[in-house]
Image (cartoon, rainbow, N blue to C red; front, side, top):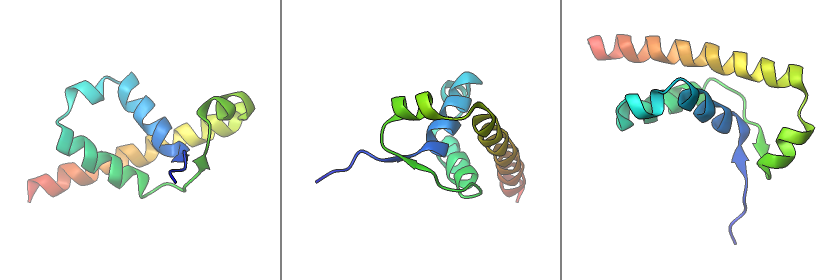
Amino acid sequence: MQLEIRNYYEVLLLELLSDEGLLDELPEDYLADLCCITLNQLPVRYIRHLVDTYFFEDYNELQQMKAEIQQALEKSRVFLKESNKQ
């Protein structure tokens, strides 16, 4: 049996990276590292159906989640930049 569940923060992170054009611009290995490091800084919020989440989500809560993702993403980029210097 395979359940259709996913982490909503992962969905939002990938949307952000896509909107910024980074999914096409950055190397795949770097993107994978960037996503893992970013997601490890964030809480987990599992969802079943994305369409239901879009319908029922609170606008302020969504903006807060996006701000958390942006902050974690910036920290992750700095971390990877520093790690690559060594």
